[in-house]
Image (cartoon, rainbow, N blue to C red; front, side, top):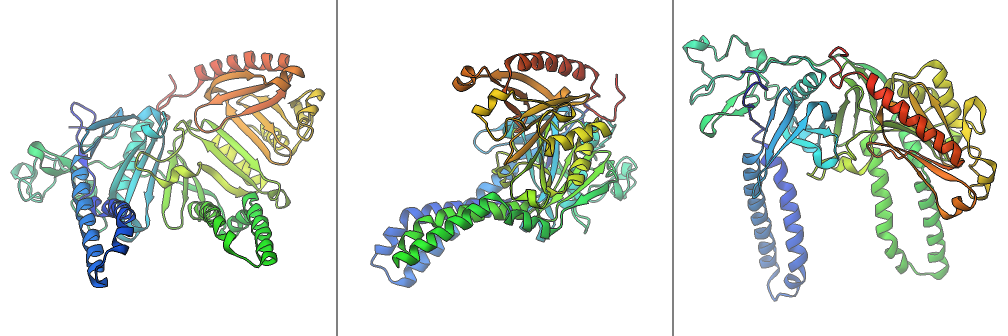
Length: 521
């Protein structure tokens, strides 16, 4: 019976999952207990060997508790893929059933933490419109199985007909087929290649929940992985250079130098320990950037844009066509000497990650961590296909230009009293496919919002703006991008709001289908 017709066919993640997740619970439990009783143990009149034994016993108990909890959580976790949605059941004390509709999926990401890379397992994060709480995370599957599930989700989201016939109950052995199966273990004439393999050794594959709670293999007609073409990559040396020229790095170096000078002049280093946590925070941020964006590669495929990166934890994210809500192009003052830019994208997820506490939620999604102007234009034109050659020149003016050249509308001259440096740079430009807003002279920012992705428009006015007859214009889109045009003439802002509202309605009426492989109605 095809998945999506009738009752959904529920599957389990791999049985190794409790072992891969138990250490997190064990570490957290051990840290809490140790923090509570460390002082008491240190003051206890017990021999050192006894103290070591108590600590070892506590660790063993924590591991057993975490293993038991992880096993129960694994037994309660199941998922299904239908023609309309990805479903997931979970919960130990409180049961939850969640659905992520295929038309609302913003990206599908396959991640491999360091242990997963060592043993060949991966997790799938399905990012859906509605915020991080709407995301689903399936952990863990074998790497081959995770790729097969990702391909199936993307194929169904595109509108392709992917049949997933499920094998009949196979009996206690699970490998032998009955007489109706021809005795070769296949179902419905499907060969061994139709079984989602559990790794290169050809294990049991994906498992479904059969009657009575038994598990049976799910035999699927695999959706082939769409071909891809790599567009660009970021060399590690450039990534290191971009972090070295980061404003946070410079501020930290200057601050550390000042503190060191004080320590030498006062001949005391005690007060330096108070800034240790600040040092660790800066180093943690820089390491997160380097580790997450290391080996960055961008490719295009019929499924959309594919982003791969990661040093310790690798991630392969596929963004289907038409899911990007906006693009942000930024440049710090130190990057200007090298002509580098950063391209961020906004999805309707309100942040990556999931309720599991995925570390990827710390940093925003990027389409280009660091690159030159030509690379920026290439990436933006891939992400927003409606951009023409003339529009590309407009984007260049938005990146580096100032004043009203090339049709840009800027702040009036009286705005110099509240923004003396950037008032001639702050401005907007409307092109056929999107609204472009630029701002900032020291820290340059260019935001691009496709007309059909405009969710709402607004005008605000502070006390100084009211006195100078100025307002700020806001073009809201789903996701993290918040395009704002400060200090614009009220009449200009009112006309832009009315015209942009009409452009957004017209663009949504003529937009392509959510399932991009289906013909436009």
